[in-house]
Image 1 (cartoon, rainbow, N blue to C red):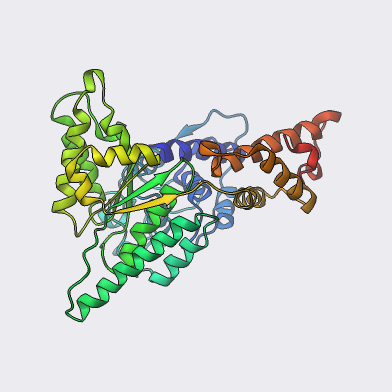
Image 2 (cartoon, helix red, strand yellow):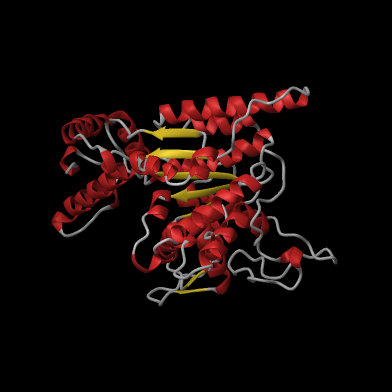
Length: 402
């Protein structure tokens, strides 16, 4: 999956940044924090960095990866990244005790944890369901949703949907008939407009209300569902469904399931048929969220009568506006500790207005790409005299804008 590759690349960078010779689970955790943040976790990036600083520095060494770290990365292919982060954080920083009262071996911060210890209670987390614990409050998760930059239309639709589900929960408690509304959703919009982020929150919102026991998000696309021969596609799709049971199955670019050609012709239909059956059989324990371009998703839903009858709610994700893109840019700059002065902000605003980014450009990736271009310009400018001083990398100037 995409997130596995991205986290692996970040883990390699973390390892190199600390001049370590081996990628450990701790490097993967730090990379995962960079990717999804630390919201809801008591372990901050500073705590992880302090632990990483305790690992001996080995300069100019070839980097390898421990089996435990590789296993942790593999978990991202079937589990919600937040679940992987939280389960490993608890397991690593609050280890269970042996029956004799001593902590299990391998808990020193500078050593990796064993991938599969003999005693189950000491093993790294591998369950596909989130750890059962105190359920988040609905207000807390809604606050996190509403704090996202932009996405006003999508946030309003989600808030209305959750209010309806919550009202049904109250009606059931009073022995009143609920208003029929399914858990399954269609997200429409361009890439990079927050669909995956909101899908992850949907699982947590459903769990906060009590509609789902788990709330985890399993993200797949066509390549994880469709196989090259008859029968295998149904097996793959069912495995994804089983992993998501109790939470959310998120299918990105779902419209590609109806665009099979050549040797794979018809195998997408096999995935859709398996999915439609599960959406009915597990309608009270599984939420299926499909996402893609607006027009393509309409055609996808029309392609199968079962899909049309099971997807009742469409949520539209609009492109980010100029001010939203500036907020995202400033957030990235703040995280990277690069100052963005009011003068630079005004120049950025004019740059974006003139450029008029729309479609695939009108999203969060545009802001990240713009930051990377500007930082490259900043470092090139700093290097003009042959050396780079730390203070030269602290602030952008208008000269850094492309």
